[in-house]
Amino acid sequence: QEQLVESGGGLVQAGGSLTLSCAASRSIFSLKVMGWYRQAPGKQRELVAAITWTGNTDYADFVKGRFTISRDNAKNTVYLQMNSLKPEDTAVYYCNVAPGSGKIGAWGQGTQVTVSS
Image 1 (cartoon, helix red, strand yellow):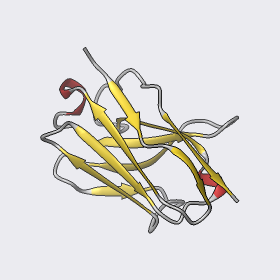
Image 2 (cartoon, rainbow, N blue to C red):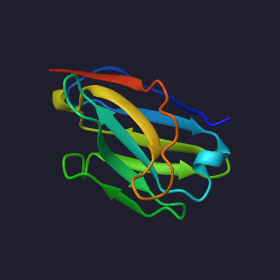
Image 3 (cartoon, rainbow, N blue to C red):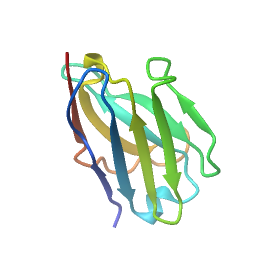
Image 4 (cartoon, rainbow, N blue to C red):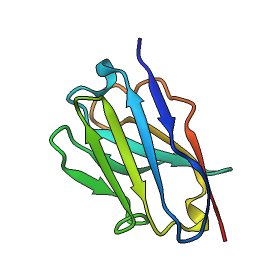
């Protein structure tokens, strides 16, 4: 059964840090480029960061230098370390297959990140 379970969100002050985790079923995770996405209220879901099976990474300009994506292939888990958080980072964060890497899995429930000013 395909599954994506995100965790680690919360409420932090601007400048703070959070680490998100996403546990995926192997059918979604294996050999895929995985991505973290976010969706703020009233906005479309956007790709934040992506990581290949071998660990190559790419980031949206608005998080470069602040966020770090990583993965543990043995655990079918992808992480997002978020530093220097800004109020505009407030959103529900999701993980899934990155665009162009295969079939997008069913979206999980996401994890809410709220950054107060």
